[in-house]
Image (cartoon, rainbow, N blue to C red):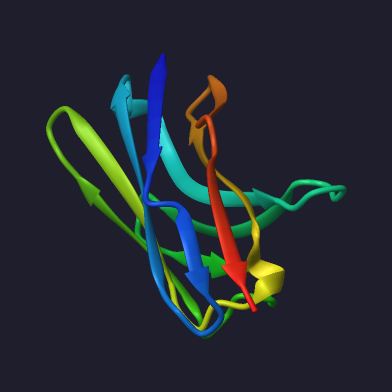
Length: 118
């Protein structure tokens, strides 16, 4: 199993920046990709960004050029970051860390709230 702990959410004014972190522990050798999703009130959860084990990155069109995903691999912990810049009120959502696991499905974090005020 993989355990995910997120941090870094908060309240920020439009145009500001935040960095989210997600630390993965447990069976980290099974992780094939790490990513972020978000869910705004009344909306479905949507993809934000992903980074594969090989370092390939993909972003939702709505965040391209503003968000950057990166990761650090350790012996006992892998961490994925989401650097968010030029934040907009429409970026307000609960952000969830998600990892794909080789032959074991996926795991999700508990979510962290990001609120962007206008």
